[in-house]
Image: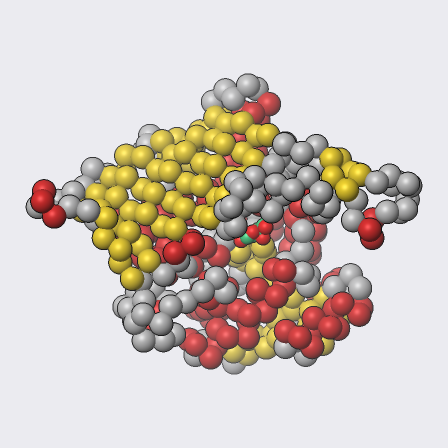
Length: 392
Ligand code: SOE
């Protein structure tokens, strides 16, 4: 097999971002299997056809089940809201298709367990599955993981992670699927808190084992979008209930016992997509900031006392993760390159016959952390074991 024929299910914002990855990864990295953008699936035929034309897909469809049965599809990329991840991913894996599934893996631990079990069975048949936590594929984030693993900052003693946005500060911002539990599973906690949890675990090489936290909904109802008015069940209602959190603040205890503090909010006025991780060790510290994604800040406590300070490392050398595929030093990358790196890592794993990371099992652990935060919040922020509900 020299090509990898891809079907993408979903054609919203993440569909555009993933399409960028499928279009560019082979040109940048000369992959062992060249992705072929075969078909994009959407609920409305017109929107799916328009997306196919705009993003470079050969065809479009409104029937994902029929697409899964096509012998000329090797991989299914799921970029739909979380309430459809489990059904589509399990069906695709059982149909023998490799799967890339957007984060968070699912809307519940039970769904995530079903997906992880299906992925385990599929792997025995050489069928691979990966979760789309793309920020671990920003070169500076991958480089941070290398430096921590190499002992550059010594023993991790404390971690601070925040993911702050402000697109819901205006109470007139209409209700959307991300604000409805039955579609999204949770609010800021799962949508962006999941990224922070995965990134901390990726950079430190440790998992969150216990949590205590609070969740909060600041604006409880919002105007219905025009398209949603007058539909069955909404009648003449002008507003709809927000059924998820607007923000989550929680503390996790890592494998080593070190504490990691997390904030995930859509009410940080002025912050547009501010994901930041600071890792403090006994020999130094690291700061990753998505708003300055081509750099990594390193503090070296072993340097002579009169020369200590945070160094701003420009992570654009060919020797840095992923940079070999792009431009000379200093020419910078952007948000979209993480999606090309995600395709690179997935395709190379498939070609090598190995399980890609983050696996569905890793996605399941993140789901358990999210669930534990919600259980803690429901019990007045008492400490909760992440594995307490584990059934596999
Ligand atoms: C939310 O607005 C969002 O689009 C998340 O869903 C993405 O995962 C994140 O990367 C950017 O913000």
